[in-house]
Image: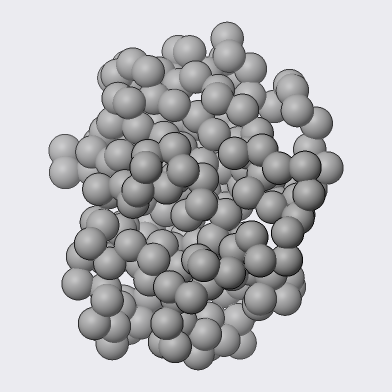
Length: 226
């Protein structure tokens, strides 16, 4: 979904789906230092970009999604609010952050299909109940492109979609080379902009991930696949 301008009401229909419980939980997360310095309203809009792209590509909510390095719950908690019937897994390696998210989900009636998983993506992506089991993967700030692709592909089923937030003013080419993604079972679809402010790279899983991947903890960053 590419846009030329940023309509003030572009995300309004999605904001209405969030309910009243999300804001206080995100405020808590912000106060605990789990979120960045971006204003909360902008963080929510940025998270909604993942929702817009996946619903547009899939003609509705995905059956399952895992949020890589979910941190304080953005976009993870927004996905839970928007997709109460979707299996939403919030994955992070931090004990403090995952404990906080466990507490949040225990209080939420809409979170009956949501779960928190603590661990490193390189290891979790080899677990039978998680490996190539998800129809969608989201990543706000997991890591550099090669590491995100290698770890994310471990969770994504063939035919599934990965949406990765891109830094502002990112050039349209170079960061996600098709030749580098092919060995990871992925193909670049393009940069999507549900609104003018935020850009996201969309990847499609085209083949099963080779058993070599993901590599040991830390290796995808130290020795990037592309």
